[in-house]
Every structure is written in C-alpha cells, then in structure tokens.
Image (cartoon, rainbow, N blue to C red; front, side, top):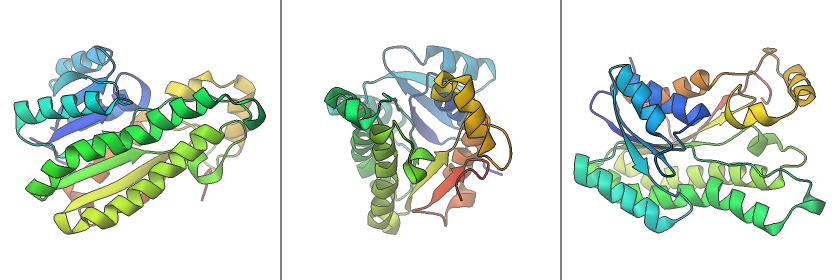
Length: 246
C-alpha cells in the first residue's frame, strides 16, 4: 500500500521537524523527493534519505519570493520532466497578542505560510494539469480551525490554507489533480518545542488521546493523501490532533 515508486515529490520546509519527516516518509515509499528549503538547509534531510537507500535532492528556494519558487520548479521539471506531488509545508510563527503585534510579524507569517502556497501551486499546476495527474497537500494547523490567543497571524494563515485548498480542489478535480489539507495538533517537533512546559501541559490536557503527536504521524497522513489509495479524496481536511478538535 501507498507505493509512490517513481513519483516526483516537492516538499517545502523540508529541513526540520514535520517537513523532514514528510520527506523521509515519501522517500521510504519510493518517491524521488525534492527537499526544498533556504540555501542548503535541507542537505541533512537528503543525506539521511540517501543513507536509508532512498532518492532525494536538495532544492534551494525562498518560498516568499515567487521568482525563487518558479526557478526551483523549472529546475525540477528540467531534471525529471514531471511533478507528481507538492507538499506545502513551509511555515513560521511570530506570536504576539493582537494589540502588540507588529505589521511586519503579520506580513512575514502570511507570506511564508499562505502566499508561498499560492506561488508553489501556481508553479506546479500547469504541468500537473497537462499530465492529468497530481497531488497537492498543504500543512495547516488545529489553530487554523479553532483559533488560539496570541496567534491571530498564524491562525489566519493556516485557516487561509484550508479555504485556498477547497477552492482549488473544485477548479482542478476534472484534471485528476487532488487538493487536500493535513491539520496537525500539538506535535512533538519543530515549533511546538518552543512553547513553555506549562503550555505543553495545558495543551496536552485538552487532547483526548493524552499526548502530543509525532512528526511521523503527520507524515503518514501526507503519504496516504499522496498515494493512489486516496484518489477519490479531494477538498478535505485530515486532522491529526489526537481528538483535540473534533
């Protein structure tokens, strides 16, 4: 099941945390993974994939710059001739209460978390439509579904990914391109590690399964949506949150 042999997959934000786990999981299922991040930050991810016998390559990209995204995608097409999977995972947080939030913190979060998905999708969509096949998966957050004080910028960007994906799914379904969202809850990786111990305890108390999730569990959900087994699923939000939000 979930055989991705020969598929070409781009994963943004692949240098750490959930992005690294997604890249590793897709490669383990046979995909050729393009690990995209700033500079050569994804080199360690690629080295780990190679060490496990998988296929991967580093792609240097600034997802907040459309020209950088276009150049990265053009390079992938030149090398491989197609793009089968796009995972919009790149994201940042700049938390602050609304009364104190700086405009730059709003702009940076929306540019990285939401506008980058627009740029990446616009770059890969034409080849996907032409080949009449593709999987587009964006990583949202439980915060985009239920909100969280001090994260109006982050919540807006992650909620925006959901609306963006649902609208896009309707546009491209006739071309056999599916568009879905994975919405993690509290995950023991990446940005979640930066919150205080007390906050982690408070959040964990709100999770029916009683624990944070793992990046591997999020990656498994992405792998499913990228597979042929998920061919009849589009415009959906797959929550990986331990029951935190139902």
